[in-house]
Image 1 (cartoon, rainbow, N blue to C red):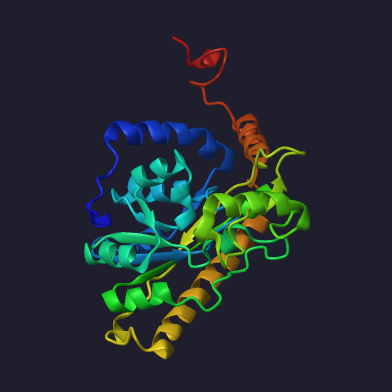
Image 2 (image 1 turned 30 degrees about the vertical axis):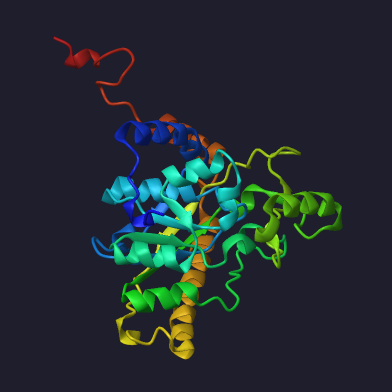
Length: 301
């Protein structure tokens, strides 16, 4: 099997097509990005953040914005189950995602690449209605161990807005979804053994539909965490736990900051943005060049 580091980035034609396909979504969400200057210009790095409901609402915007600003395609570690879905696994491969194993992550970091990881994984993407924006990293240490081993920085980031696009009708563990869980287990086979996070909740967006409610998406990248003070201690669980907790604290603080911004944003929805634009246009005085009747009489020849 070829190394995941040997992946070929999408062609310019495919990038333009994908960017065009994302334009309606950008218009719907009007994403706001902060702190992209905190991303390193070279060398390996782990970008560590929170997964939002369903997991795919905001991630493409992150990848394309980093590429637009820095010309870099970040690689993403994803759940094993993605590669069991025909068609979708092809999209994951083309986009540079890899099966989220330690070996794949190590190969990418060894090749000096920038890697996105969501330690909460499918558990956060399938969160219940009571776990809004709660990080569910539990005791996971893998990403911190790999960062210490590689001696690379961890860049914490947060995403806010996707949770408000939906209202959960049935949590993933609801007994009414038992038939769907049974079907998923049959499809996933051994991949589903011992897991309770592979079933997505049933949610609604606008009215009873799955169309997401129009909500702005907010992103922030924080100050990188230097892992070199722990270099050589990747097998020391206490040291690795300290790194993990630093990253978790940073991500949670970023989420809290973004939620505060969201709560005071008067342009949070497309309707609010349109209303504000129309108001500003109506209240902006016309200059002589903009006057519908031309220049004032005393300025005419």
